[in-house]
Amino acid sequence: MPERSRAQTFKQRSAWSVKLFGLLSVVAVLMLVGMLVDTVNASASQATRDGLESTAHTWNADGGNAALAEMQHIDEQVIIVQAGDTLWKIARDHKPADMKIRAYLEELKYLNGLEDSIIQEGMLLKLPE
Image (cartoon, rainbow, N blue to C red; front, side, top):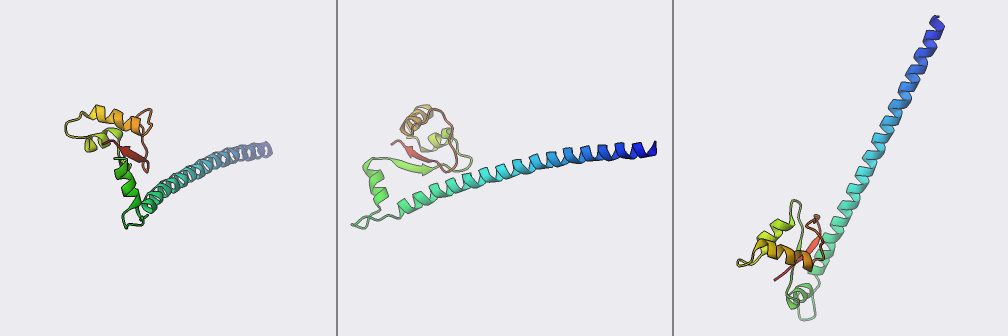
């Protein structure tokens, strides 16, 4: 009888070990996927910032900033969405004094091709004048 008891105990421990190993494997894979997603997001955000910085340092022949001249020509301002920004907050902070926030928000969405008010850190948004 004691021999059978040892065998059952060994099987129970083995089953437990397999389940624990499986659970730990799933947790490890989820952590790796999360780290990969964070890395991709950080790279995309940095690339967006680098792209804007390289544009800001492009000088035209007469010594002016080409990107600035282009923005003034089309009469638009461009901002980079920061962490914690919302479309409502951006509209509130940049709207003309005599305009309602909701009207400016709708212009902001239309100008940037947004179907809803979801924005992400690192996005470039054109501001209506």
